[in-house]
Length: 199
Image: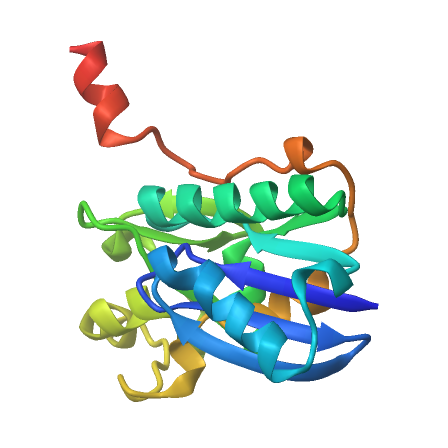
């Protein structure tokens, strides 16, 4: 079973290629270059897109533009190759990479995306109340380190690999494969453009 996984919800996007549970390769990329990075991964492993069996895509939350790019790329590839597609929360994948951690993604607008009582949520960093000793990971944890540490949480060093969203973890979590059109983004709030239209 050859699986291509990608996530473009954060500034440091990634794609991964797995054969069964075996990781064949993984690349850090930018959202706009994710298809080129995926093609390179396939070529390095001696495969072509036609060899793929399924695709996994990060659904966010994160950057609106990044999520749209990744989901459009994954849907387009799945439709073109008649492959099943599964969506996986970027928060869940980040937590999967560091078991027991609390994922915290920078949401801009002085907000963060995280899990509250196990559910995806958007909140202000000062309103997050992690239990003392909680390990917080992600670019939001880095940005709001002082607030989180003051609340008793632990945040790894800024350059730690623990803060990165790795597409391999999306593939590990994916279970619900189906039609590409059924995979929806997880935004948690409306885009600025839509807010402007409401005024």
